[in-house]
Structure formats: C-alpha cells, structure tokens
Image 1 (cartoon, helix red, strand yellow):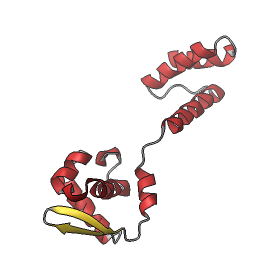
Image 2 (tube, rainbow, N blue to C red):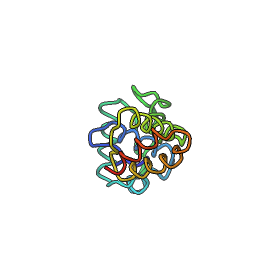
Image 3 (spheres, rainbow, N blue to C red):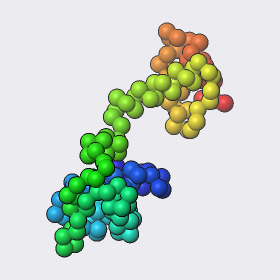
Length: 142
C-alpha cells in the first residue's frame, strides 16, 4: 500500500512508512522511502516523528538511512495486517454482499463501475433468477 492510499491523519500512513523502512533495509533513506510510498520526503519524516513521539517506536537514523530498533506500543504483526491490501477473495465477498444488498433493497449502483457489475450479473442470473436479474438491470439503468 502507498502512503496516500489512506486519508490525512490516519495512522496507517505512519504504518506504511514503518513497513517500508523494514522492507528497504539499508536503503531506507527519506529519498527512497518517498519514492517507494509515492509521497514527499517531508511526509516521510513527519510520519517517522509521529512513530517516535506518539507510538514510542525506536526509529534510528544511521547516516541517511533509517532503521527500526523497536516497535514501541505497536504490535508489528497487527501493523502489517492493518495496511495489507484486501485479498481477491475478500474483494469478491464484498462485491457479492453489495449485489445481494442491491437486490434485496432495490438500491441503485453507487458508481458507473458498479452499474456495469449490476448489468453483467443480471445477464448471468436472468435464466435461473429472472426477478433478481430484472431488479439489478432496472437499478443499473436508472
């Protein structure tokens, strides 16, 4: 995950920096961290300061590289899990739940891509579940 995948003031921004420091090892300079995370060096340095002061992480600077000597109040595994992108199965489950919700409540799609998904699903369902297919197709067209 990238730094700006999360909203401002979200601690997961700080977590992405810590994970990148660990992943880059000796190359974990502000420059390479900013390139890896697609953010500015100032944002990297600010996130490191938050980790040090608020989370009590022991992030040391050796020359121009950063290293994590301690995770402070953080559990390293929990940090990794909090910024992990959802798996394909989790995305599929979320989309399926959204389709079931749309069929049961008759809600319209929230975006053009969801409307496309409604139409595709309606085509797949029309033979065995014509009522549900019609619900999705109608919602996608409105």
